[in-house]
Each structure stands twice: as structure tokens, then as C-alpha cells.
Amino acid sequence: MKMLQIGQLAKLSGVSGDTLRFYEKVGLLTPASRSDSGYRLYDSDAVSRVHFIMKGKRIGLTLEEIQELLEIRLEASQHSCAEVKGITQKKLDEIDEKIAELSRIRVALKKINDACCGHVDDDASHCSILEALASERED
Image (cartoon, helix red, strand yellow):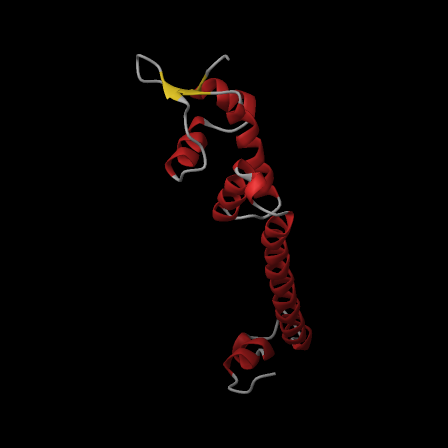
């Protein structure tokens, strides 16, 4: 099996060497060995592992969630598909909560924005947006 130095792995996986060193530092990636001169050496599985990490990040998973999925992947026969789905379902629930919160924020912001006349010639001392934010009343 051909071993890869960090620069080769970076090129094949499309990430920087610094990113790979960070993944190593947080436990997502482990060099298979070191060369006599101290260079990190990675096996061919490292490329697919980095791709797994990057794909997980693209779909919004945290590094901790990715680590959990990588551990399950290594011991797949000892885990159920339901465990994996539980991780992604939890992430979906979190995203749905964020979307709902952003929708509430948008409605409130649009309401005060629409109420403002926005005239260039009017000074801001009577701006309805500033008044709405200063109001103790919850809308």
C-alpha cells in the first residue's frame, strides 16, 4: 500500500495541510505512521475519510457529529442504522428550529421596517424603527 505524505493527501482531498493537521489535532484523522524523517504518512483510507468529513461539513454536521459517525462507521456491525438516523434527525430538528426562529425574526423586522417612512429629509429623532426598538412593549 502506497503511503501519502500530508501534501499529497491535501492535494488528493482538496483541503490544505493546515486543515489536515487540525483534523488530526481534534482526533478526526490519524496518520498511519511517520517516515524516518518525521513526516506524517497516511494510508489510502485517509482520502475517503477526509471526503467523509468534508461532506459532513457541507450538510451542516458539526465536527463532533462527524466524529461520532466516523466511529460508528468503523464499528458498523456493532451499531444500528437507527443510531445513525438519530444523529441526522437531531440535526434536522435543530435546523427546523433555526428556520422557525429566523422566520419569527423576519416577520418582526419586516413589521418595523415597513412602518418606517424612510424619508431622506426626515431626521431620525422620530424614526419609527428607533421608537419600536426603544419601546418596552413586545410586539
